[in-house]
Image (cartoon, rainbow, N blue to C red):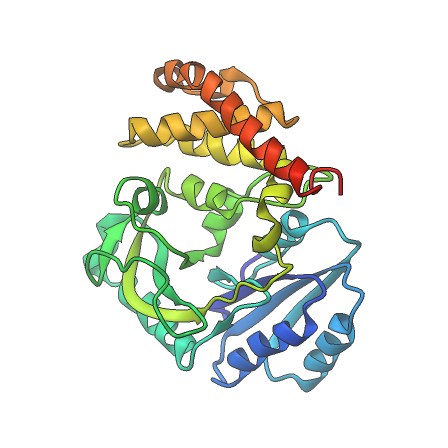
Length: 310
C-alpha cells in the first residue's frame, strides 16, 4: 500500500558493495529531503553491507525499509524493492551509482511540473533524466528538447536516443507491469519493465542530469555476456515485450529482437509462439537463422573465456 506522506521510493538491490553503497547513501542524506524512503534488498552480501545498513537505520536520517535474502541475483532483489515501494513515485538505483548535488530537489520540482494540467492528456507514467559518467559528461545522447514527451520504447527504438537514462515512474504503474521471476536466473533486463510501461503510458523527459553512473570492473556490466546466457528466460521476456509493442514499431528493430529471442531459446530458454501478436509472427519466424548465428558467435566468445562453465 502506498504511503501518502512519501513522494519517492529509491529502490536499491545490492550485493557486496558496501563501500560503493555508502556513496549513494551519502548523496541521499546530504539533501535532507523529506518524504523519501530507501528500499534496500541485500542479496546475500558477505561483506559489511548489513551492519552498515543497520547503522543507517539507527541514524534515522532517512526512512529505510531493509530486506535481506539469500543470494538469488539482481532479478529477485530488484523485484522485491519495487513491490515493497510505498512512495507515490519510484526510482531504481544501482548500488554503485549516486545522485549529483541537488538531484532530489530537481526530481521533486520536475514531478510537480509533470502533474500540471497542461500534461493531463499525455497519460504520463512519470519523468526521465540524463545520467553522467564519472568524468562528468552526459552518457551519449540528450533528448531532442527539454520537456520532450515520448515513451521508453520509442526513445530507444524509434528515436534512437542512446545511453543510460534515469526513469522516475509512479509506483503503482511499476507494480502493474513488474517483470516475472525466473528461478535460478540472476540477470533481469530492466528494459522489459520500461517497454511494458510504454504499452499504455508516456514520459516527460528533461535534459538535466541527476545521477552519476559507475561501471565497476567485476560488476554485472563487466560479465554481461555470461550473465545473459545463464538467464535466457529474462532475455526472452525482454524480447517478447519489445516485439509486441502495440503502437508504431520498427521492422528492423523487431527483426533484431526476434533474432535475440531465438538466440536465447537455443541457450536454453523457453517461449511459445502463441505469445507473439499475429502481425509480428512472420518477422519472428524469418529471424530464426540469424538467431542461430548470434548464438554461435556468443557461444564461441563464452567458451574462449571459460565463462559459460563458471
